[in-house]
Image: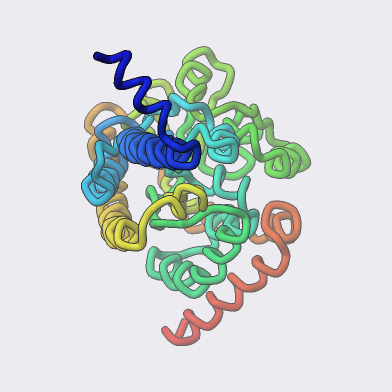
Length: 355
C-alpha cells in the first residue's frame, strides 16, 4: 500500500511536488523558530554581582529588583545575584560585564570609575561633604549628565545608593594624620593614583582586593582599614582593628548598573517595571544605610570597639590635611572639570543655606 502511494506521488507534476516540499519546509522552519523562541525565553538570565554580604540590606534590595524583572520578563526567566565578591573585585566585575559573563553589578565608585572616571567626584573628595543633604544635592545636580556618560560607554544606571561614611579602623589608637604614618593602609588595588598620593605624603598603602581585607588585617599585612561601620561590623574587621577614628572622611557612593545590551534586550514594559523598582530600591538603600551607620557603631561598641573622637584642634589638622589633598586629587583621581563642578554646586548649596 505504501509503495503504491509512493508511486502515485511520483506521478505528480514536478512543479506541484516542489510546491508541496516548499510548504512542508516552511512549516518545519516555523515550528523550529517557535521552539527556538520558547527556548530563548526560558534561557533568559540576568546575572548581577556585588561585594555586599549575602542577606544584607543591599542584597535584599537587589533580590527585590530581580524579582520584579523576573515576573515582568516571564517565560521562565532566571535572576541570579552573586554576593560576597564571589565574582572577584569590582574591576573584575566590570570586565565580566564587558564580555557578557555578567549583565550587571552593584558597585561602589571603585568599580564605577572603571567605566566612567568622573563618578569619583562623589567619593574621592575627603572631608568635602559635611552632610548627607550636601551629597544628595550634588548627586542630583550631576545625575543626568553622569548617567549619560555611562550610557555612552555601554551601561545603564538603574539606582544610586550609598553605604555610610568612611571611618578609619586600626589596630592601635590614632587621632592625628601623622599618627597613621607608622601604619599600613588597605588600598584598593585598582586605584594607583591614590596609592601614589599616599606614598608621596609618607603613608604606606598596601594594594589589595576587598575580599582580602580580613585575612590581611588578621596577619598584620595591613594595620588600618578605611571602612564604613556597617562593613566593619559585617566582616568582623573591628575584632582585629578595634580602634575607630570618629570622622566622616568620605561617603561610600554606589550604583546598580547593567550593560546596555541587557537593557536593550528588555521590552519597554519590562524596562519601566525595573526602573520603578530600582528607583524605590535606591531610596530604601540610602535611607536605611545611613541609619545603619550609627546602629553598627553602637553594636560594635558593645563588643569592644573603642571610638576615638578628635579634639577641635585635631579636627582642624584633618581639615587642613584634606584641603592640601585637593590639588593632588584634581586632574588625577577626579577629572578637573568634574572636580570644579562639584565645588560650584557645593558653593551654591551652602550659599542658599546661608553657610
